[in-house]
Image (cartoon, rainbow, N blue to C red):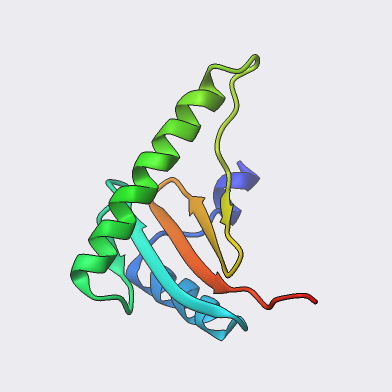
Length: 109
């Protein structure tokens, strides 16, 4: 019962607050918040770019989740991290929305 009380609501104000907090993080280049179906609902990206990112990462998330569900015992995907030399993408699926943020990485020499 306590878990249900502490679980935040996924309302427009919640989405706006999460977006604002992520914007304040250093190194965050892009933020993409999607609904349960993978449709972008809040992002600074162009509409076509946001749809392309959402589609590609939704397919990757589904494949990862299918793999995890075949493990013994079945696991749930809580965060997906994809890192390249210059960028890092964090995908955080939630019950009602998915948050994707793209970071610019600093090169360590």
